[in-house]
Image (tube, rainbow, N blue to C red; front, side, top):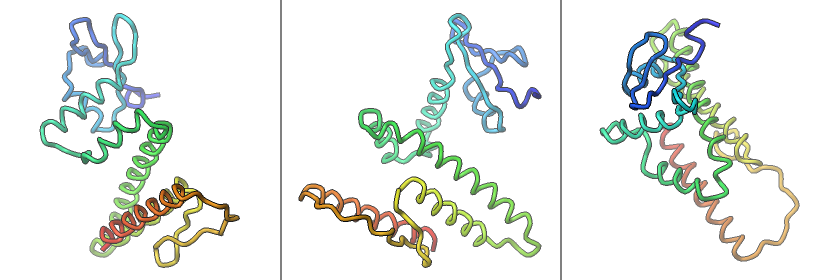
Length: 192
């Protein structure tokens, strides 16, 4: 395994200074963010205890960028993340986020691949169509019973046996349908 395939080991000293073990020098959070942007995996450990501090420092990097006005995460997403720590959704959120970012990376690489292989001037629609296909596959995986329709919209899944729903369950189902319709409307506007 080459050095660039192994995670870059950063050690945190008692003084809280961060030490790059490859270059034998001290680094800042911005240096670490630069390593990550360049595609390098990073592992940050406490020198004395050996505890893995990577998550803590990555969150600190995100927080610093957000506080500088380099907003990537909308308030609604941050709010939902906070809520997920106290709900049953907590178990689904990490998987959902990981799949979302995997899908984003795949879409970006496929879009770049499409742009680089076109002999004619760039055709952005081919990249957008690839992203739409990936979104549909992702939704089909995450939402049981959801199937893309021929028109790109939601097609009804095969009808499961009907069970009687309580008034509260019916209201909750109606609320979910309204939210899905709103989401579908927003997605269709993005595709235009």
